[in-house]
Image 1 (cartoon, protein in one colour):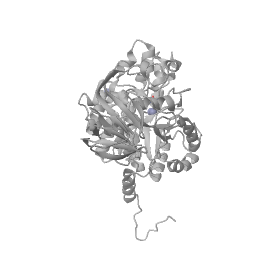
Image 2 (tube, rainbow, N blue to C red):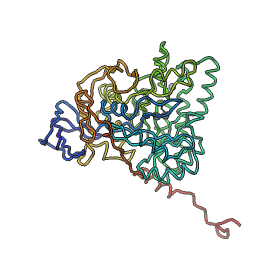
Image 3 (cartoon, rainbow, N blue to C red):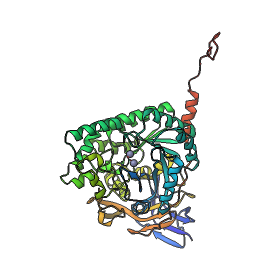
Image 4 (cartoon, rainbow, N blue to C red):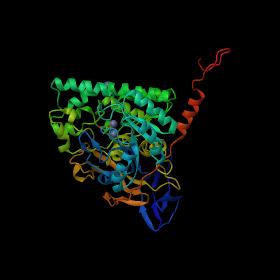
Length: 483
Ligand code: URP
Ligand code: ZN
Ligand code: ZN
Ligand code: ZN
């Protein structure tokens, strides 16, 4: 059975051209003019692009005394509805839990996935077992390790642990990632705010200003540089963090920054809303920022100093958010966005001229596939690539509403936003998962995607590190070893 997408314009990270796409066995088998097949999908007036890849989701994640409410079923349905055909979720070992053991739990959850998926492994504590298991995780095709510099007392690791883990990543050709906020300062500021009677959701933003993110981002960059590894900075939300990344890149350091669609389009005024629920539903870390930070993030996408746009999808119901009435530090941190990332970025980015269509593809798909070691299986419109595609209609409009979303929660942080540009079809390995707004995907269709370690950037860095490694100076008459 061959499916052909006809009459569309292919948009990739570097090309825009008219051609049909033929698909068989879940892969692209031909790209050209006048292709024929058993099933035809009409793409007249549409762009045919690599499906979105969300490099940062938390589906059914145990966090802050509860579980995030979108699981691999509702979460991946939401992804497909919005043109995203793959997610990378975080396997999160409990303190003292082995990495392979945690992975089993995430393997079980993900059997429900409607679209393909992979995992990052979180390093939430440090010890011999973690050190020994890291290469086993890489052998399983999980080649990125996340570190939290925030959430003191639960997920946070200290600088010595961070350095040890980064060095281990260097040895095994893996990519370290960081949540960069200074957890010591956040804990101190939170306690002080509470003591002063600042208990509402707005105090969440007061407790983690852009300085704590700028400091932690710069620190992680310097530690990665000393360890000789590249670094992926998740949810870059402010100018200070962007500045650190920009400066590092200009110095030849290999650092990638990942703004979220939420930080690009929503700002800190949300936390001053008179309705407690409205404000608490938007509590996430880092918090939404002032407008000038948004301008910095948009500029970074255009300049190429920021590389990927994610969601950090971590959805909690209003009921869950109310755990924090009277104490903002107990509001589960996280917001949703899986279904809305592409339409929001297209509307606020491409339709306004802030980014080009090709940059849109780069930051939502291709760059992510390249950085994360799965290009061109994912993130490409090429013969032999997986047919994870979105047929994008730039003229279709909708108003975002929780009433029509796939997500399991009872609100949407983008409620009321008008978007122009939506999927006509979303294809997951050739299967039409969404057609004209109707989700017809299948639970369990999603497959795990094993990723490659030792990408070209890791190889280049380790070559340079070997070349510049400390070597003893040989001196006449002085033996090399002490005594
Ligand atoms: O507030 C957030 N971002 N929640 C999800 C966990 C994380 O820090 O990424
Ligand atoms: Zn985080
Ligand atoms: Zn500022
Ligand atoms: Zn996250």
